[in-house]
Length: 442
Image 1 (cartoon, rainbow, N blue to C red):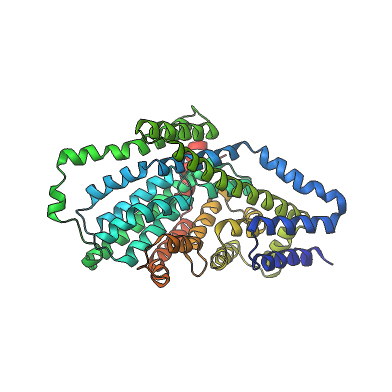
Image 2 (image 1 turned 90 degrees about the vertical axis):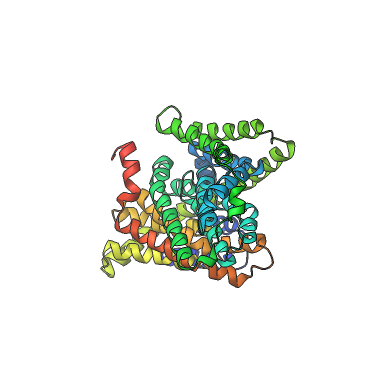
């Protein structure tokens, strides 16, 4: 039996087991460990152990629970509520202004959390009821919240980029900086779409009435700006210390987590329930990602041992004579197709052991490729029928929003994400300029 056939058999077995509904990390880890045991005997038992030790010794992994803790602390202590009220008053007088404010809220939540689920929770529980109550179109509202929440996996501190960095062996700091401009570009496209759509169809996003606007004086509006000071101060203290070299990446995440606790205490919202819920959710998310990474490392080690990457490279370049850009487009199309059925972590652990080394072998910058992968994951979050955010929205949305409404709402935003993907592909400097400028071109 050839190694190419074994690699194909591993991939097919993994996809078949995923269809049974088993947990992703269990399927990936089982297939990798079983293949190693059958191929190399008892000595391969050290493969999983070595992968586990590699994960435990990876110092930047400490950033994962700290950033997750920070995001949940700000959400549980309702500091995000204050932030949305500020956007509500300042952006409300514009047509579609509350929807624009929701996108801006999502950008800030993304910059202090790194997870899509946090933005979705804030948007569905805080923004959605207010938008619907004020007569905003339910389909547009649903799309805005779902699309805006996906910014959390692109704007630093992105947890998905941490996972990618571990598997691709790329520095997390470079990856985070590479996600800044693409994330802002995508948010800007969302805002432009909302503004233009509401100019053409004013009934979709009515502005606040004159009576409501009269309730807030300029002094009240300026006072409400304090709602945005705390998240902004946390973000500046966290990233500023890191960018100036005062703290390392891990120390920066510790500063952010500590600042979020102090913010909750200062606002008088630190209770045992807030601390308990924040810690419990942080533990659950962190353990999930740790298990997924462990399984991915084990599976990837077996694939490396089989030489699967070299075989695929020989197939595309040596036999099919495809140029590297054609191969790259095929790889991204594969991600988009898989995104219809799988979430971002499943795609990462299934395809990354093949595609990331192949992208490197073809001469592509793996930091830039990480941004392309992450944008593709954002599309996967919103792609029917199994998009992760679609199910989250269904569980959080009020009864009047149907599953059909949810599916329809994401269509224009998926199109904008694909446009962003194309722009970053054609102009790589949008992603690579900031990390190259800060760290140098080495």
